[in-house]
Image (cartoon, rainbow, N blue to C red):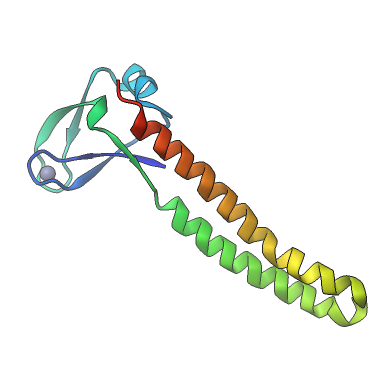
Length: 123
Ligand SMILES: [Zn+2]
């Protein structure tokens, strides 16, 4: 989850670096008015915490790549032993291969919840 404000002048998104999980926490950390200098048009405006929106961050993409790589690595590893493992490996393969996906989607749901929580609660 990342926090963004949209520039009043050019409407481009600017990131706010904070780990606040809601707008109350954010205002405690940054104050009632957050001054943000737009990195696109260099204009500075004061934004209220209600102008800040939570959105998906780049971490989602990194984790997606991690999930795909993890699935391939686990599948390769398990396939090496599938002949020796006999009947057990038949079960192990689908279980092992689905682990990175389960972790990823679990995390994604959690992230979605956090984003919804932040955006829902206005100060
Ligand atoms: Zn701007």
